Length: 152
Length: 140
Image (cartoon, rainbow over all chains, first blue to last red; front, top):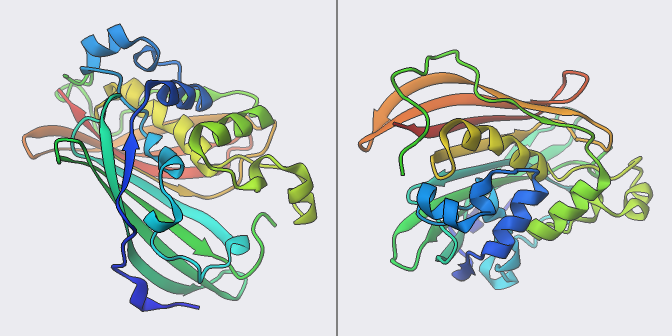
């Protein structure tokens, strides 16, 4: 059921250290051979340090506890699809940084589904600051609760 | 660090570098699960997906998006991406071959930076879009 009152609710801030091993592993996983992720000397010359792959902030899954997620328990996770994902970057993020993320419910709305049945959309935004308290990035995802099980 | 993309020479309508992903395979999804922390079983647990009536495991949308994002760092350089947005249109299955590509749609300046914007897509071997997206990168 849709509950508009959750808009604006935030999770507890969570800490996310940016580690080289995890960056390398992630770059390999998305088949990205760019040497800046694998050669710290080269990365220092080209980027001032080892940068993160564009979608690396997805690894916040390892650092966010249940408390640092906004409350989502009204959703039926068997009928959830990841509809959209967006990243904005304001400052460089490099290996050695420690980010602090705060997740917030940005929006919730309903639409009629194509095959009948209501679909509920939930947008969650996470804002990241670094150890110098600079705002470095914003991530936003939209989850869709469909009328039926996913994948069919 | 300066972008390797030259603002003055890039034109609206220009293609950005294409990335080809040959032979998508189950180990890609397992590796991505471990790398990203996305352990939704739809992407690696065959028993689970069959019980749900789905023929086989399929790719995490964000795995495909990660493959797509390489077009941008190949285009402008790592650390030059300012905005990346994707919408998931269709599942990616084991055995698929993907083409990640994009086109420049606008050039502008904001906050003292020269910026290049465009649209993105990942298509499978049948020409169907699996991911659609948009980007903004910094240019020099």
